[in-house]
Length: 283
Image: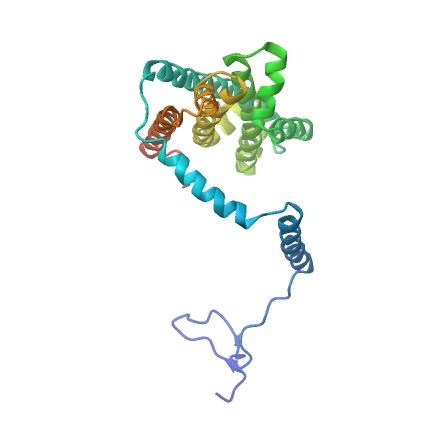
């Protein structure tokens, strides 16, 4: 090929004049110094952490055999107190559902106030508030509420509600911010008020997204409600903690099976609902 330029073909394989630079090959992208520096820092910090934390491979190797020996003591599971354990599992489920429902209600209101495209004046403040609720782990919130209201299911509900609100405010606001701006401008031009735009324009566009995120959060909270019982926030976690303290590994095994069945059943039902109604699918 002697010519340096290639004429466009009739079938449109080349949409215009293309440079015949096939001998040079593809040009290499310049490395981002920030990404390179972050990669080096991450690798060096990982090695430093292994040394600083006294990561002992011999202890890890010995602990593996101890774990296998303890795991063997868990079978067969002991279901002698099945009625008491199932009641505790029901309490965990109730804590998760009530806490998530309250969190969804709070996030539903504050999510609109956190979206920059519809509430620019309040978005920064509400997002900052949601970040504070979200960065504090649920277990820490449970300990705080246990001090405030005592042990039992109430601090578990409050802890799940608080952390769920922080997460859902963020994702709800992001869903609202993805709404077509042209639609919002069209409604504003007709003289529609803020509340009318939210109810008639924004909410129908984000409703399925809200449902998908709420279902996902419920799945997470089912697992978290099982853990909160360990610190005295009610539920089945208290049962597995007591069994482990008493070295009743067979009873702990039965509790673990109940937790798995509960979490898996809720997740399976949630996925079936999503598939049936097309929740979370784009387009």
